[in-house]
Image (cartoon, rainbow, N blue to C red; front, side, top):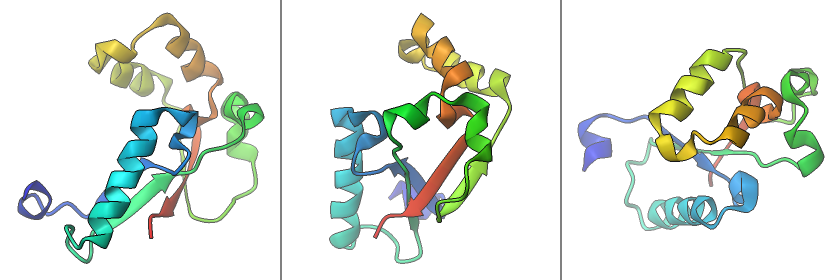
Length: 117
């Protein structure tokens, strides 16, 4: 399979809540858990999930970088042009309100990743 052939070391996905509650995000998490339990991944493959946060924390923008660590891996960025280019690469995602999310959304600036068990 692709993961073994390309020597993939980690997959980052959504958590059980799907970050935004989107059914596709939740289904992706569930699929990864089922595949792991069925032994379909290499034993050393690390599966990580992006931690969902309450709505009031989703729109604090760069202030998210000031939040105390909540365990897991923390990833920080201030590269707004990079995020904008990533959305442009996926035209279905490049809608006007996503530009607001890039500016005000915490996930642009700070993310917490936890292992999927």
